[in-house]
Amino acid sequence: MTMKPAIQVDEWKRSNPDITVFVPKEDAYTGDNEHFLVFESPKGEWLALWTQSSVEGHGDNHLVLSRSKDQLEWSEPVYVAGARRGERGGQASWGFPVVSEQGRMYIFYTKDIGIHDLDSQTTGTMGCVYSDDDGYTWIPGTDIPMDRNRYDHPDPKVPRNWIGWQKPIRDSQGRWMTGYTQWSSREVYDVPKVGWYSKDSRSLFMRFDNIDEGPDPERLKITWLPQGSEGLAVPFPGNPELSVAQEPSLVLLPDGRLFCVMRTFTGFIWYSVSSDDGENWTPPQMLRYRDDGEPIRQPIASCPVYPLQDGRFVLVFHNNDGNLGEYGPHHALHNRRPAYLSCGRYVEGARQPLWFGKPKLFVDTDGLTIGPKGTSEIATYPSLTQFNGKTVLWYPDRKYYLLGKYVTEAWLENGLD
Picture 1 (tube, rainbow, N blue to C red):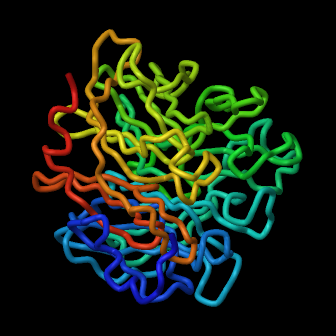
Picture 2: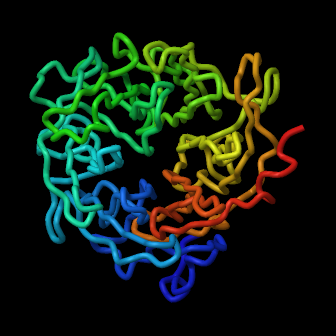
């Protein structure tokens, strides 16, 4: 159902948020807001980074930043990188931050240089801006060379097709690392597609080996993982030669292993585990609530897992296999709702190291669409923080509003047998 403009005034309240970060005043240039990452600055302020545009795919993606001292009151967003108002091209998309021990902050993103393979917001170099004054000013850095593999365009002048989306975590040796999605170039893997959701893709990782020293971007040392750079693959239903394994989300387990979950088009979340900080990974498997339990259903939507300070974990997902009412798996504008939370815990000796409890419905849009994209999705590409004893899930509502909601014990208790 599409809402009439006159009803939209207080529509941001529908999911009962506790915190409001951004409510658009217009659709042009500022009406699409996603990849919403909240993090702490070196001096203890809170920064919210996201990708903004007129509408996803329009060609004016840019990165903006808002700040807060208490996570409650947020400044108007300021421009960081990408397309300027009224322009198309020169985009900055899907930025993610790294805060070094030295105090320098970096933002890395998919940089549109005007050479496109799949599209203008996925094909790009690895752009970088950095700040030495707690994020008040950002200095353009050199593009970061990316490792290439057999799924990239054979012409090295054509950038990779890739997206990063989560805040990095520290591995067992304290090094920052994060996952990213790689889509195969049409030139090397032009398998017949049935829709955007069937593009050949894999999950890979990057590790920042010296970033805590605060080097200039051209002196950064990055290790591209896993070994061989093939990435984690999950067969597409009906076509096992095709892989759809995207939007990897990482956590460090108590035993030092890495645990990664991914979105797929199978109707379920899949996972993999690494015992050597991402050098090698187990073959991906369907994520279940526990060993031999029911698989965890999920449409083709981000499904992050986050660590909690008390040693538990929380999974954010949509608890359907892509079929939701009148909609099917390919209706991604309408089946990415409601958003559920499931509390997880580490189980020593289990085949699947994290077990999850009964899902609890956290936020919903009631199927109403709003914003230039016309989607009813919620809590896609969110982030999570813990501060002053409060846990907040920061989530986009229909890729339009940017909101926060407390994850209290009521959302987590009785989640595990």
